Length: 243
Length: 150
Image (cartoon, rainbow over all chains, first blue to last red; front, side, top):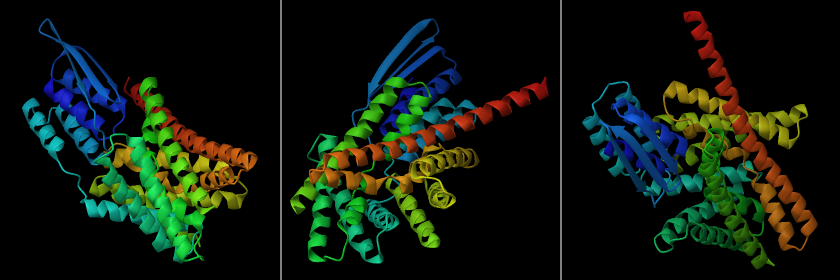
């Protein structure tokens, strides 16, 4: 029971699809010899029930905090596959899952910020910028990512965090354009907003919808749309400042 | 020009992989998925396709590629498809529509916003198309094996 729920919670906390959560829990429980296994996951909670020696067991876990860590999903997937195929025992699998749960992100913080800067800079050039636009838009992307991390500590609301981060990124690019008029405002803004693009929400929502999990798919889709709207409003405010 | 675009899409997809904590051994594959997606996206207009069609085709190529890679590397396919669609994001369209709204050009804004939505929809349906094609292919292969065995 604990093993199944731990596996499910890790997948959900790390930004996995709900259908993957449900399937993993069901496989582990069935491989452990439980009957009548049923699992249900929404983006914020996991419910598992099964029958063991004539007794019904049901438990539910909530996952309030969610991040994106695809490495953990891959590792949990690996553990469950090995357990189901009989490579490791239940207690070994549980120990391994505990390790994965405590694991820090594989890339240090500075590397993630650098990656945000790099992806912003490269995308702004892909959108038609010149070499001159590379540096400023990388800096703007870095600002967006840094301010997002900073605001997350104080603000509980995810969308307000994204909104303020986008606003900061927009203001930085406005500053650059005012200082160096040969830069392009459009290119800088496009690059700066890229770290906020809700890629994982969109892909997960589509995959959940395709797997027939309508509730999770729609709620993830709404999450992606709210993020997009908050970024758009922040961009509009920046443009309005410019006059 | 083409080489520059290829290098840039590779860099931005790879960096996006790092941002999402993708396992180390699959980073480069994610970047490659993004690069091939951008290659398709930029070569199709030369053959006379419009933006929507080329977005749709390249998104489905990315999706199909990430399913195939996920089998070879034995990791969930999300690892690749998330990074792969990055070069296809309609950033400049979205920006132009916000600019039009701020300048009180509501008609232009709505037109551009609709175009943005349609490109986003093309990415989404491309991803779905890739998944479904792959599912059908796998189902057909399993069915073939079953008939062989029996």
